[in-house]
Image (cartoon, rainbow, N blue to C red; front, side, top):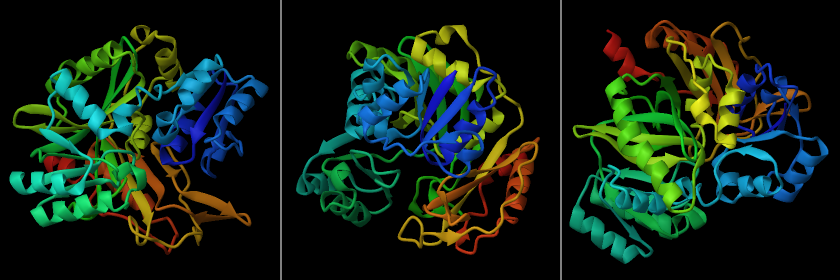
Length: 422
């Protein structure tokens, strides 16, 4: 098969690495890709925002299948354009991608289909939103409705913090994403990430992970796109997985189909495991980043047929096999992230890949033949082990071998799971 992968981050490097191992693969292209992805795929200088150009490339190269990594192209309809041109694609339609593109849309689906989630209200102006916050009190959660690259969510522990977050949204801190806000109840519990493939009618549970959103050790500081992750998440017991499928995934899949927007792709459910059980924090419509990196390290099955089954409506005919060994990834970020940071800082040495250990590139480029950091989150240092503790030790040993003066990372990724093991 000839496959085109859309995207340029750590998630896409993990997908490229795994897809390239498929015996079905004859040619893998990536647009725009990154220097790590170039080890596994032919990079293409395509403007992925120009959907006509993407379709033209697919026709020119006789591409059989397109895998869309990031959410932004899905929300604006790249999958619709490809399907209309007769090209198989992994990823939901623009209408179905509203599950990530609009927090309010997802909350309304939850209300309609009785899916457990925090109580909420939607607002399109600051005075009414602030009045609601003052009436509810804190802690409370303020979310920009649209896509804000993981940064549009404030878990406010005080009313003043919530009021400031409302101002940020309506004063343009997140662009158009903040034109409407969703304010919801604070859920107390342990977070988990749950992944499930869907072809519109069938769902296949994948694996669980736990992400570390806050920038600093001890879960302190502002939220980021994710500073590290590990899989599986111990809080997601077999009973909790079964409940998540029954109470959250299946009603969503049914609701989307009844709404005329059948969902094909990957459900990434951000969950809070509360005293009542699993509750939905939010949906994403693509693999998590950096959760994808640990999932791909643990996946024993060929990835390509699984993704194809989503596109072909044959998900009930495939299964996914997983390694029992946990995987853990440490995100190395540019100093200053998630605020402003220097770009094009040199990375002079990376550890070599070995069995169960790999560095995925998330925000890198080659400049005059030298590797430089171009993003906020730059490298995903990933390892497996017999326990989370062992995977953590291996990953941090590798991180210590990276020579990049402008990089930093959290030192406590996986702490909840490691505590459970001791």
